[in-house]
Structure formats: C-alpha cells, structure tokens
Amino acid sequence: MNWLLLITTLPTRNATTRMRAWRALKASGAAVLRDGVYLIPETVHNTQCLTRVEHDIEDTGGTAYLLKFNGDNDYEFTTLFDRTLEYNQLAEEITECGNALQTTDGSALSRRVRKLRNTYESLIAIDFFKGEAQRQVDALLTTLERQLAVALSSDEPTGKSGAAVKVNPDDFKDRLWATRKNLWVDRLASAWLIRRFIDQRARFAWLDAPVDCPSDAVGFDYDGATFSHVETPSGLLVTFETLMTSFGLTQDRALHRLAQIVHCLDVGGLGVAEAAGFERILHGIRARSDDDDRLLRSASIMFDDIYLAFQEEEKAV
Image (cartoon, rainbow, N blue to C red):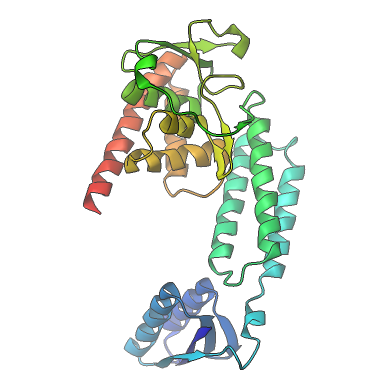
C-alpha cells in the first residue's frame, strides 16, 4: 500500500494557519505520528487534501514536505486508523436515540437521527480500513431510521420484497389515483410525479384508510397498493422511486436527485444536502394549506422549481 507522509513546521506566530492546518488534517482522518508529522493512505482525495495543506503552510511562512512511500513490509500502519472507539460512541448514541422513540417529540427526534446519519457518513469517509464495526453501526442506524418512520406514521408502508414491476404507461391514463390523506413527503412527491410525468389528467382521492380505496382507483403508498415501497436486493425503494422504476423514468438525472431527497426524508439513509431546506419549506406550505388538494397544488410549484433547478445543473455538468 502507498502512503502519504506530511512533515510540517508551522509558523509560531500565525495561529490562524496552525488552526486551519489542524482542522484540515483532523477532517482528513490523518494519523499523527508525532508533532508535525502526519500519515494517511494515498488516494486522490487524500493527496489533494494534504497538498492544499502543504501549500497553505508554505504560503504563510512555514515549511512542509509531502512524501509518498510504500509501507507494505515495514510497520503495521493500519492500526493507527482503527475507528472502533468512534464507532462504539456512535452506536451508544444511536441506541440512546432508539430508547427515546416513545418519549421524544417526532420532529426533534428526526433532526437528531439525521445528525447521527451525517456523523456516520463523516466517519466512514475517513475509515480507510472498513470492518465489522462499520457494518454493525450501519445496521443499527438503518434500523433506527426504519423505527422512526414507523413511529411518525403508523400506517407507513412496510415494503414488500421483490422488484418494482415495469408497466405499460398507456394503462394508467385518465385514472383516479388514491392514497392516504394528510399528505407528506413521499405521497406529495409521488402525486406530483404522477400528474407531471405519468398521467397529466390524473384525479386524486385522499383516503381515511386504505380499505376505503375505490375499486377503480390506482392505489399508491400504502400496504397492498399498486405502487408502494419495495424491498429490493439492492435496498428499499420508497413509492416515488417505485413509480420512477415502473414507468421508466430512472434515467432522468434531475428526477434521480429529487428521489434522493424524498428517500432521505421518508425513510432516512444517506444524507442529502438539500433535504433540510426542502423539508422546512414543505412545513411552511402545509401550515398555510387547509386541505390536501391545496397542499398538493402549492407543493407542486416547489417540486417544479426544484426539478428545473436540477435540470439546469445537470446540463451544466
């Protein structure tokens, strides 16, 4: 394995440079061999990170040498990057959060779980030698996210095993679509997707309970619905993702990015930068909407705008 070694002498009078270098090296996951000497596995990202630190130190009057060497036959450097203690601490926080499911406000708990997810993602980014500790914490966090989703919405779909079935789009034109009332992220996004890409003349029925679904309606986002959560071999699909797959919309990169936000907010998982702002805006829209029809109309404007913004960004890539 190739390693990077950064040897530094920082200017004693420039506290800003010292703090900036320390923060960058800590965030990179580099191991400290001694004062001013840092070790990290060679990757493109790590090389770029340490090169920036090297140049920053030199530009402010210090000295820095970035060296590369092969250490396969020398020392057990990998032991310097053992993250077990950090995973143990995170596991304790996840367990504590899980114990609070029945006694803590749902919104506050959702924020806490997203913070735990962000902490986990930051940790695995510097876990260069992944092992059992990472796997166990990932399982704990995923379970907690599922439990939270159930606690916040007891009638949330559980997800049937299998795969999202491809359908003939012509069979789903001018239809009545039905889902549970009191719309939120996945149901709102799915209704927008249906009217925007699948059935432009779609009509909607908001159900008190799934058993109230009319016989001629296409149900979505509840157990037993035509389109709902699906537990695939590669992971869980929320209803929005199931619809994308069933109607052949997965190649749309802008929709894919929107799906990541919906998935994150509905069942957790990988953090998405736009998710927190997206959720806050939806809360505002719901606060001024007195029924689900008005909520969908207002939210659809936001979905249109975000989709357009993602389209423009994808074109620029």
